[in-house]
Image (cartoon, rainbow, N blue to C red; front, side, top):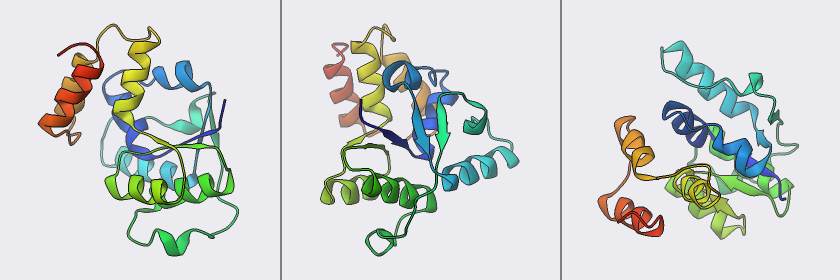
Length: 161
């Protein structure tokens, strides 16, 4: 199993819809960079319901060794930047990202990606979810940006259209 490096949004949204447990069920353990912890802690300080990865046994917190990718990702936030730096340092790893620009940068650099929606589809295929639709509804209630055509495509892939 390749190493999985996770950004803030998959942790945030899966936690907020009560589906955070699909992460360890699907991938075993994940790596979370320190910038993601800082982003989550900032949200918690504002009163948001967010996970604390440092308290999860299946999370390893690891900082990038170098800033070799810094010039490639100047328009991204610290969490996305550190996820991509770690992914470049760990060839073959998978980056869990929802941000469109971060996903484009990852793809351009040959980094395999997966997002929250892909995780939900994989969880259904693996039998961890009976339906994807309630999770999509929950994501939208939490403010997850989901275009109507993307929602329809996900439901079709899940066999729920």
